[in-house]
Image 1 (cartoon, rainbow, N blue to C red):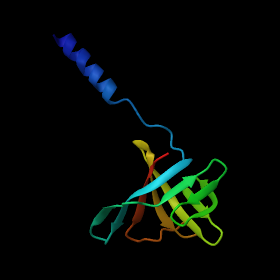
Image 2 (cartoon, rainbow, N blue to C red):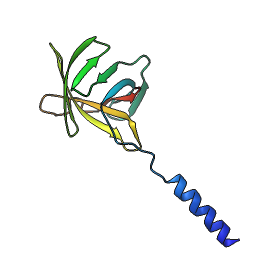
Image 3 (spheres, rainbow, N blue to C red):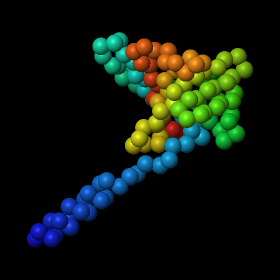
Length: 128
């Protein structure tokens, strides 16, 4: 009986702890689904309906579907730079360690210093 119990425990642990994560890839279409903000005392999570969609191509082409513009992107480590004809955006790009289908973008200035003292993150989900 002890052997059966031990065997069941091993099966549960090994199947429950298998890593289902995939390597993160920026390439693809992403949609804003949530924002995280703070007033200094409390964090606020807000769902985003009909969020902006951004497509990142293999050839460093980026398309912002909300602004309907095409540009280039550069990513080095966790620093993401979006370059459009008349605008540039800078972000820290973080990923969810359990899911490669989510990324967190924190806006920063051109020196990669945080813009929001209290935090202002937009969470994107990979849709393609």
